[in-house]
Amino acid sequence: MKELTTTDAKNRSRNRALLDFVVLPFLFLTVALLGGLRIGAESRTFIFITPPLATLLFAVLLMLLLVRGGLLRLQQWVGSDLPPLTNVAHIWLFITIFFASAQAFNSVLPERGLLHWLFSFCFLWTLWNNQFSSFDARRLLRSLAVLFGTAFVIKHMLLASLYSPDGGWLQRVAGTLLQGVALDAPIFAPATGYIAFFTLALYVTGLILLAFAVNSESAVVTHPVVDEYKQLSAAERLAVREAILDDPRD
Image (tube, rainbow, N blue to C red; front, side, top):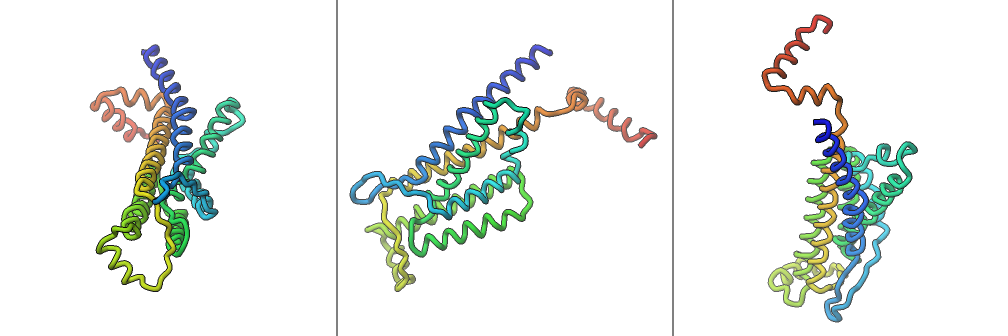
């Protein structure tokens, strides 16, 4: 039994090291590289859009939410009692998450014009209000998935069809409603939407893997008495609880 427990602990440690040092940095670095990639509508060339200053502010607010939600644990992952390589790996992971967050916002943020400022205001309002809300990892992931999903649908589906040459009835209706309003939105190839979808999917996947890693880490840190209690049968657990409740010292 002890050998099995030792083997499980070693496998868990190796899997966690593989996730922290290889898988997660690779995912978030890929997001950071693809978040600013666009494809020209006519030339079909790669266009790299640098993240605006607003996306860096959004990334800072999002990192604070990740810390409050328990996905990032600075005090446990970086400390003087940890090996230097572990501290460097965790700091590198924080950096990749920050730039991946900025590029995730960059992938769904219109490049310029009135829509750019409208989207920026919505992102800032949502992230700022969430700073004062109670959050856990599950609610935070669900909120981020809804936020990025809504922005993706509006930019790469609705607005893309609106500004395409064959926009159809949606383009005519929007042109009538927004007559006189200069939106000044650039036109990119449809492949840009696929790149943005793949980018956001990788980013959310990385956050989900990070949440699973944090949950498994919390599950490992238990007291021996709790482990022994979990190995008891249902009747034995009931007897233990009754004995605790009937303890005269309570």
